[in-house]
Image (cartoon, rainbow, N blue to C red):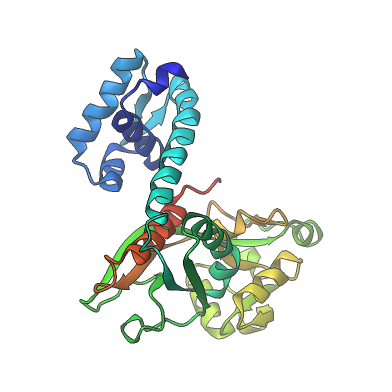
Length: 298
């Protein structure tokens, strides 16, 4: 560890971003660097340690055993550096006031409580409001200061950052699948019960387009509230689509045909251009970006 403490943090940061993003180009974009600059920093770290940290696999990079060993330490150092940065920002006297965050009910329930707790520790003078809604909040009318969305805003006076590519799968409770059996084809999934949040006919159309011949009658349980619908799926009432970031937190469920049925969708953070440079908005915006872009365990 003493040797790590003498290393250039920029080199370690380049290594950490490359390991987590999976490629030099993605890591460079994440850090706001050019790819040659990032590549030089990773190479410099390998020279400093006299170790090979990455091996090229196709168009991507794979960590060597030495790279895996280093990653644990680099993540701990990166987390400490981020806590120090956010703490310093949060202690500034102007970091006070109210910030409202708009997100879907399921994100508000599963992700935002931890985010709000972190922010309150970092900036005790902040007041955070969570606007849990499945409708798009109108930021131009100040219905919220920051919104988490799956569509990029078209208004020129809104600032948007694409923080991750969401990964959705179909899930069911393990005990439900133990009783009903695990389908091996999309067609066989139609014989299972389904849980809908929102309009079953609309969900039916999207799912049929993926090759699963469900009908509106397949949705034996439904709720407009995503939290309620997901809880019913977790309790064994049927199959339900869900963002892997959410589903990975619940041990009661497992993916169904994960190698055949998946939906990728963008996750955007949006705020108003006029307030994006406000210290309190910037603190909350950047912390949300950090949490939402973190890798999700498979």
